[in-house]
View 1 (cartoon, rainbow, N blue to C red):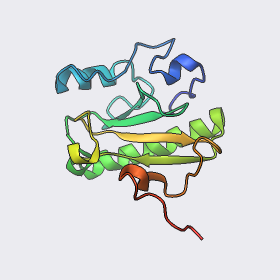
View 2 (cartoon, rainbow, N blue to C red):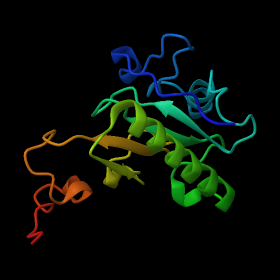
View 3 (cartoon, rainbow, N blue to C red):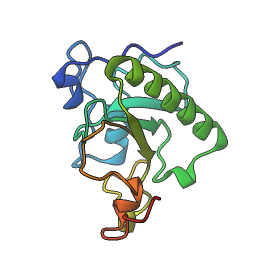
View 4 (cartoon, rainbow, N blue to C red):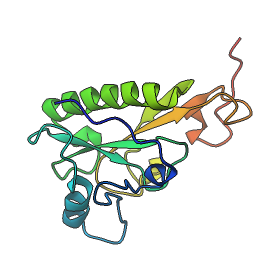
Length: 156
């Protein structure tokens, strides 16, 4: 079943969807509670899909979304092939919806694995971050800026 269109109200991008239960990830609850909360109201995807879509609670851009496995795993390196395949199908569907709703100029897609990499929520999730021309002064290096001071390079 196809995912519903991406809502474009500001409240959606702050983690609340007006017509659905709030599905933001709370850092102060147990992993089991996080998983329940992440999947509450996620009726758009197939009922037995191993992964789900969620709106990021602390978005870095409009439309910032998460793709989250249903099974309790800490990082995507713990995922099964079925979970990876499901997640990538959902990433593609989210991109298509965001293209139509927001027409971004690009995307950053990825995940943090481990505290040293910046992971703060220890239930695997993939970020789908729409990017817009001018949202940063110089986007060269993209995700390479995760290591501060090492992102810039001569792109020419």
